[in-house]
Image (spheres, one colour):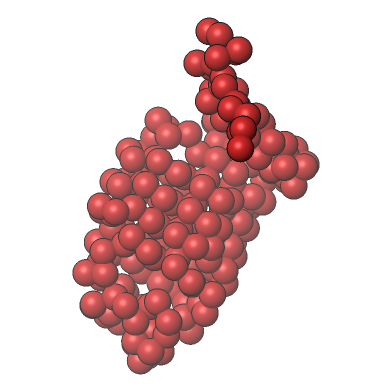
Length: 186
């Protein structure tokens, strides 16, 4: 049985660039899809939003350590703050209803976050980081958001979860929320 062997030798010196071009094509394709979805991107102080400023698309990694999301924002896009290791404080306004997958992944300096009661949807691994610095999560929802499948994966479950008075039992029984070792009312 004679099997034909495939070789990259014919590419010569350009074979070294193959991984780079493959990554570039994949990135361009992903950006193209995101562009079609977002229709237009608008920048305010290097922070990217959709054209009507209701969706925060991306926050630069080297930007300031503290950020207040504008009140026009209703959605925080997939991986919007990804890798912002210098981000220590974020203020999420009550206009936000959706925090998408990986929005705060690898924000290792973020120690505390308040999730307003307006948030009704979480993507997966919103706060993922193996060595997450989160020590406090303040949830203002009286009833736990139910679609939190793996939203807090990677967050140390010794992180304190603060919930509104009268809702401790609901959080203690709710999927994913019940995994926090300490749930306190405030």
